[in-house]
Length: 462
Image (tube, rainbow, N blue to C red; front, side, top):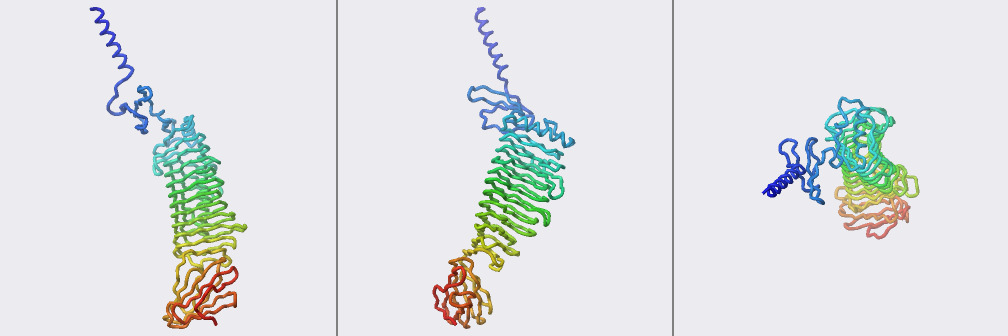
């Protein structure tokens, strides 16, 4: 009998010990939660507690929220809205540095914090505010505020307030160090910096950010390999600074706005820069200025421009502009040198008269036909021209072509009045004058590089 009681006693002791080792989940506020897989886990509120099952052993492990995937709340490091800039910088730096192996997040709660410069020296770090309207970091110095010195980091949801100093003051909102890759800046605002955003790395991105009231550069893309900006709205101070400065191998801008500055974009040196679905608004000098890059291709597609484009290339292989499906308004003129090349298709509001004298090759790929009814018009040098003399006789002039092999076709579509076209420079005479007296009479010409040559014709010549 005593042996039976002893056995029951041992069973009760075993059950009691198991109960101590595996406590039951609690209920209510701050309850512990059983998780069956790490993939089910999301970052909780600060006072939550988690039980996590280790699938390899089947046991439950308790993890404090502060250790959960390196999640740090900066308030736990004495960050305070009433704190000094030095104290808050120390707090944030300690929180960042506590992620000794990276792979962690430092959360900056809602509030406005004075702060001195901070750095991220580890990879895979996220510095996360609560949104650009919620978390604000204020800096009043003259150096770089946030330096990212390693790759694979995310900066998100922060309002970076600059010192609002003079141009050339040297203050930078965020700087990505040389050769550091895949740093993403998202949903941030940069206000009143000398240079708001500086990228010296490669394959980095800035998304859905606002940059305003900068003094020298909104974005300075300097000596990087590749990268992109998407949904970035850059507004300068009237007649001051450059929205973007690009000195990179390749860089792409998608759905960005460049407004109210001296230059919209300054391309200093690059292999290829693309502007897709962008808006250039009220630049004082140029929408896009290509400084002196050799073999640089600038693609502008589906964008809206004022029409102020400049290529200052003086090297043997100048800038290639590809303009496709853009809308030009209130054009300020296009200037380039003879080394530049322009390929243009389906651009609204872009005219030959927008090009300054001495421009480089112009390839108009529209192959559209203009209809001429005025008495003394100057014909476009690309595509076709229809002569409609219903109202009056036409005495037209055809100027010089832009590139070897350029074709021009002129056709009489209404012969109510005999009309003439004079080619300023022609292989047989200067000018060469053709007469059109009947419907469907035509003149097909090709530009040789120095003069027009007749390919075929049914019109007559004076």
